[in-house]
Image (tube, rainbow over all chains, first blue to last red; front, side, top):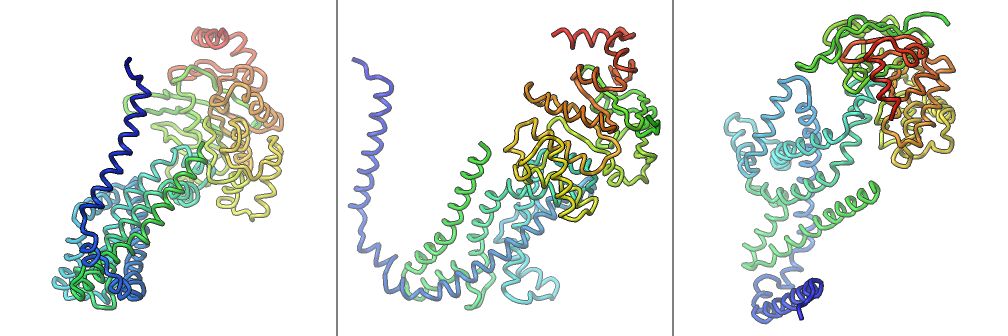
Length: 263
Length: 247
């Protein structure tokens, strides 16, 4: 007798579970756990990382991220509005800016702005925080400009028409009616940008930071040099996750809530 | 009825690219008058209405509302629009604001009324359009008919000299049309000047002082509803009316 389709699907599902468990067991048996732990997760080294990894490194990562995000959001909004302007030179400028800063890797931008500008102009960055945060914000603003523009364009055209026909000026309508709605739409992608920024701060250390301005990734690398062991990097990775997972969960929660509300 | 001209349109033309939508429209609306514009879809009636508050910029011709020539480049459109109400087919309520806030926001930002004054006026207007205890409801929590009535209250809050209705009941479920028409009728009875693009022949017949039939971007025929709807002179008007009334 032939097996029914639904029965087949059921068998297939069971097979996937069984195979997964077998694969996990195989990995568990093959791996030399003792060696792995001594190379990557020694408790005394883990403990050594604290509190410096939080009070120094994580703090710096957060400072860079917040400045990068705040700067990126303000300039991103400005460029988004310029992209949507009826005045062509504004559109051209914003489009060019966005293309350039989205197209060049952050690492290269950091090096050009961080080292190239002082060499070319004789002007020096006032402090390492500014030197790192400004290029980060400039690149972030290019990405966020596109996100914000998409958000503004997602607000139905009738909203602007209704606001204008009530006598509001274009900018008044933007501020009171359009942007609040656009921001609601783009909170999930903006939070994603925030998570990306947290990780991108790890590139700032190429500018040769001092002990006081080290970010998490640099702290981990210095720890590796110090201990000849990979544990500090693992701890640094876990601290990144401790920052990013709550954020991505928050986004998931917001999206679920928005979905429920729109039903 | 006093006969100040509220809206005065002269030789209005509007093209979208090669598409010549309005071909020389002349139309006057007097204070307190209710003018219904009827006609087949694509006849230009919505475009005409949208030219009255310059949501569309005319290609040629003049639009004068309350003595302000809106088609003049020196005219302050924001100031002029504050006196011209508009009610849209899709309501266009602000979804991030409650019903009360929808009615308050332009009072606050444009007319610079105080929060208390605006809220008091808004509350009264929501009651006037038959929405009691809905002050704190968001648009998504309201039916289409209720949303459209909030939109009417939002227009009224500006004390407009004329209100433009752009197919205000076309997006509504049939059973919700009546409540909106009723509000519009009561506005007409209170002497509001209204320019109404509509497919509701019953409303045009019962409420309009004058009916304007448009087709192909021109006004084909206009006059009191008893004439235009009940015994039209033009063949095109007759053809349109028979297709609308016999289905």
